[in-house]
Image 1 (cartoon, rainbow, N blue to C red):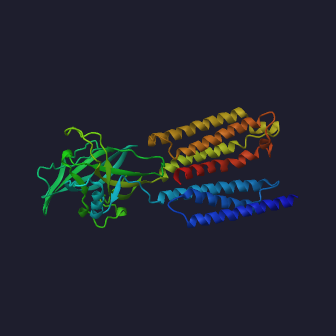
Image 2 (cartoon, one colour; image 1 turned 90 degrees about the vertical axis):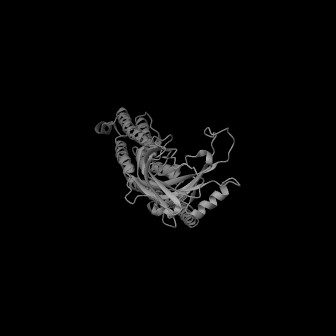
Length: 428
């Protein structure tokens, strides 16, 4: 009977492996976008089935159980690394508004968005960034040049200048150059100011950010429209070549990815005091976007290394918890109070690391890296509960099995499985 039971289990596991492999192939063929979760989970299920089929963790030999536990844990760790690499390499950015890459695209967009019959004066505007620095979680300091091309055909009396509405110094007063270019006058200003912008840190430290420069013309009441000065950049516009960015551009822990002009429409419930208020359709505003990718290795490993060290210590504490004879308990120095005290001290250390993450991001919600702290809270709590159950008068069967072997076998699969599941739900 025993052999037949094992044979039925083997056939079931083999069928599971075949179904998992088939699903993995189908997902790989018909994949779209970066939907990592179904592919990674299917691969994990397939590999786990193969290991179960080969090792057959049924019987009296404990090493078979340990081999399955280690294999599943390693698969989860490999899945984490695959997801980190895939998310870091993927080319998906969120840019404000509609991206335009040529004068033709800009004209086509404006033709569809401007009110019928309107013909605002258009002023070509360009941007060149020299440096950025994240001074705080939602404040970035930017320096560079902005210029405008005023054609002789523009209405007379237009103010020369540009407004950076989201900057500390919204009106750049330092004129850098001014010259004639054919039938137009080109004026450039140097700016160095701080922008307060809302960044999304939910994927920290695997996050990407869009640092944008929003631009207005000073004459609000004259219907002036700023458009990209594409003639000042190489054509065609190639975002990955990062036009408008200093070749020696350096920023700590961030890697520039691309640049782009875009238009975004905003609906204001005021006319800024220019006459009586009347409803007006939203007006396209010009943005220059710099997309940056965080160099995640430093923040990731400076958090995961101490958390991993604590996880190893908690795992080692499980070998102290024993429901064997009293002599062995005395030899290993096991008491439930001692294990709980150790668990409390570990929780405090993890809480300090989590607080450092909160201070670094100041995010209103939970950021990705915090889930590793939550996973450690979970296994520390389970370890403390396990210590109490071991010392109970009548421990449950799971605790009595092979002298508390089950919690040790499940520790790493639970911790790494939780980490992989939260990674896929957050990043995948």
